[in-house]
Image 1 (cartoon, rainbow, N blue to C red):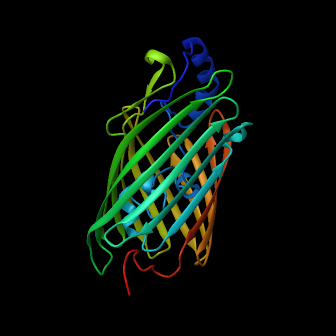
Image 2 (cartoon, helix red, strand yellow):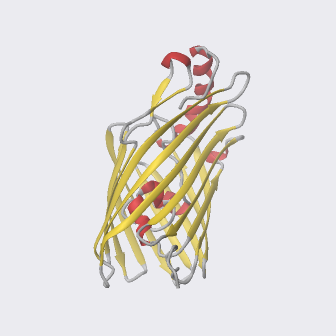
Length: 302
C-alpha cells in the first residue's frame, strides 16, 4: 500500500538521490538495500554466508539456516559506513525455535540524516526436512520482506513494497554445507515520485555457496551471487584460536575484509573491517546472544 503523498518533481527527487545513492553504492549497489551489512562476521567473510547461515541473520541471507538454531538467539549490528557524517546502518534479528519450525524476525535500517532512509522488516520460517544423529541435514526456509523508503526534508515522500524469498541448506556431512537463497522473487518497485517518474525495482537476488568445516577450528566458504543481472564471487575463512577467539578474512572482487570474534559463554562480540577502493575503510560491530542450553521448543507442555 502506498502512503499518501504530494507531487514531487523529478528534478528534486534526482537531487536527493544524487546525494544518497552514491554513498550507498559502496558494494556496487544498483537498487535499494543492496550491499546491506547484516553482521560483522558475514562482512569479515567477504559477504559469503549462504552456505553457513548459523545465526539469526540467516533469516535474511538464507532462512533455511534458522532450523539449526535450537535455542533463542539474538544479533544486533551497527556501522557508520566509511565514516560519512549522518550516514548510519543498523540491523537487529532474533530467532525462536517452535514445535515444528523455527521462526525469525529482523529489521535493517539505513539512513542519511535529513535526506533518505531505508527500512526492511523481514519475517522468516524454517524447518528440517531431514536431520540425522551425525548432524547431516536438509532444511528449507521462506521469508517475507516489508520494505519502506522515505525521503525527508522540505517535502516528505515515502513508498512501501512487499517481496518474498526462499532458501535451502544441505549438509550431506557434518563437515560440508551447501546453500541457496533467492530474494525479491517478484521484483516489486519503490516509487518516490508521483506517476512512476523515479521507480526503482527491488532486484531479484540469488546466491549459491559451499562451506567446509575442519575439526571445529577452520571454516572455509565461497559463493557466487547475482548482482544486477551479472554473477560475482566472494569467499572467506574463519580460524578458531581456542574456544573464545576467532579470526576472519574475506575477499569480494578486489575488496578485502577482516575481523575478529570473541565468544564467552552465551555472549559474543564481533568487529569487522571493510575496504573499498574509492571510499576507504569502514568498521562494523555486532553483538550476539544465544541461550547456552538447548531450549525446549515453545508450545510444548510438561
